[in-house]
Image (cartoon, rainbow over all chains, first blue to last red):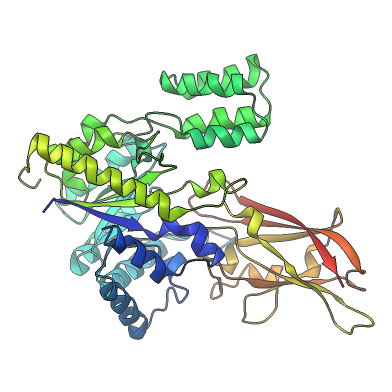
Length: 337
Length: 129
């Protein structure tokens, strides 16, 4: 069996869950039907009882997963440092909130936690004893515009090394490997009034990996860009293409991946994120964990198209199977990192 | 991310005595991919036919009873769950006169990981009976 497991985050079905056209059980059943049996949850989205889950609530979730041959992979936490208007959360309150999540993850039988990227490394260090006690890996989400070697991310890596713990690390979001500008983004900006010649300039600039600020200035000032054009240029600030060849260096620090995507083409290829370069690197280094689909295309198309998250996720998993098979044939199975 | 779905236009109705309504109410959802404790909802601004109504006129009820926007600021134990309609009650003597109206809702949220407040807006054409 492949060391790379396939799964899906319920975030992927946010459109249908929000509108009530799918239940969480529908999402789990669908994931299981396409071999995405690892389920990532956002308790604050998917559990209306949050944070006060009873033992019966926990049992209900376990039964639901069992009915579909699925299992939990990851718990996406949030930290409301601005809960109060009059003052920010104290450090002790932040630790208390994270420990609450660690304990709940443990009750649910979940061993990975997606930690929001803005959480301070020293706060996480204070949570490590609890992460170890309850056996939950705290993975700081490496989300664009951060990337694997951003200094802020390296602080968490350094903290994990200093503590000598395997319960603190990272959790990469594949949005950091945006090799090509997403066609869905461009199309929506054009519907909002961006001129095709300007959107082409922005796409070409991204393709050439020109630093965002140059392109923003060109569009906003020299080209007299309208609101939609400037907004599109500004998305480049959040559209990095990190080097896939470096992912193996960080593999010991992560056990779960948020497989972000914005759209899949009909031939089951991703026009934007470089999965065809990332997956071979994961196989080469013997990484073991779950590729967890995170579809985020709904907000780019819902103004004109009905959203079909199931079809999008299905196509991504066809791609995963193909790329994993190809990479395993090329590199064979390696020892676990 | 869900702006166009915030107001449920079919639920707009006058409240109070039929002959002398005290205002109107409607169901709305939170424009966010997770639920939120009420203290982080800074504003539910209502604009009717182009005129923004006073903040004091607006109350919110997710099922635990009506609460003013000022009281929401310290409601640390109440949540607006994801994808779940809550009632927005607007004190507006006379209610909505029969006919077509433009109703807009702007939500201002204090999301901790964002450097700026998040705004969600929806505007719908609604019918008053």
